Length: 178
Image 1 (cartoon, one colour):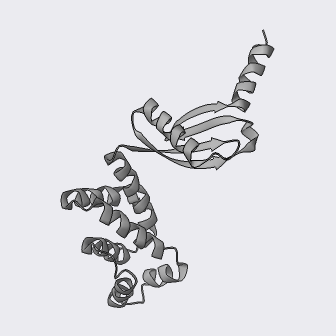
Image 2 (image 1 turned 90 degrees about the horizontal axis):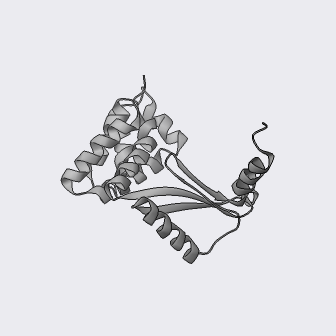
Image 3 (image 1 turned 135 degrees about the vertical axis):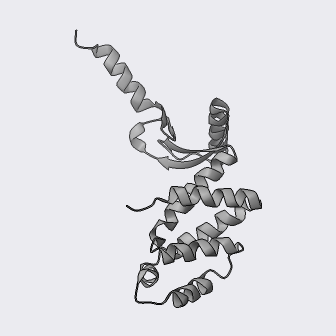
């Protein structure tokens, strides 16, 4: 059974809170996750025939700018346990915990046409008022929705698209078949 990044992220988050280093840990986890994008490097770090001291030296050179020594210890631990592949998951889960801590909700916002930054800000503020949290949005365009907006926050979906309204109108005009 492989361990998910969620447990590690929770532990890291608690350490970061106690040390008042929430942002430093996020920066460190981002840098660590970036090096795991290199498949050749991951292959070397997972190779059982390579001594841990050499792996540690490689990690130290690649991550010399990390400000939190405990973040390096996390990498060493994961390399020693052959679990380096969960580092991106740890970063994602940590980011989620940090968002909750800061009262931030992440939303995916889909519009039919591009909207300018002022409209984006106004839309996100309006959504924030509805859910009583600050909202950060990732915007996408889908011309198939015809107009309006679709917002997904976690497992909640707000479909204010013209396509959805037309579909609802069609159902009401056709009836339920009785």
